[in-house]
Image 1: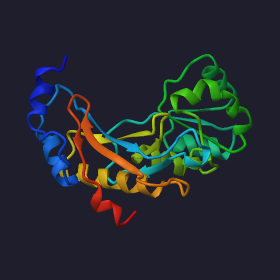
Image 2: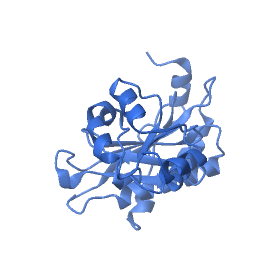
Image 3: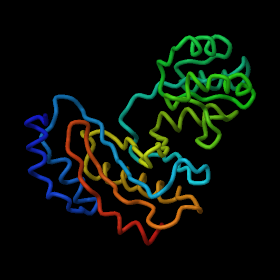
Length: 232
């Protein structure tokens, strides 16, 4: 049963109307607020078949104004320069055999995992433990690298990952409701552009069917993406 707050929010949304991005954010920020700093999420329905390997959509995008979240970083690295650089860059957890053992036992109290290429020979065995939670290091998202310091700085500054799910949907966190409308718009614009750039060459027809923006406790607002099509 929708809450009173949610129902009041619905009254501010004109049915299935498509709002230009700036207008969509204006509507979002007028919704009744929850008692906590809600996260803002963008959702896309894509015209791809995720079952086909050549139609996988995934990528990373640095949010111009950060995500508003505290990101806990784990780095798999053998003792040496990469491990020392990771500690100096502020990684919460740095190690190799000890961390692999903890993860195998079910521990996942971190938000991003980074690994050196050397460490991946053992880390890739954690697929069943980390894969379902989206925590597996991957070269395509910049989380398998010898430059651990750079990777840590990027994820802590607000770089977010996105990946299409089995239903052809992509969800991307873009900030907090406490952000200024201008900052929300700029973060959202960066994400929309990144999703369009990630379009597989094998995808035919309409790529992005719908795009919505919402806060944790709010109704979704449909975004008119036509302004982005020319640049896609």
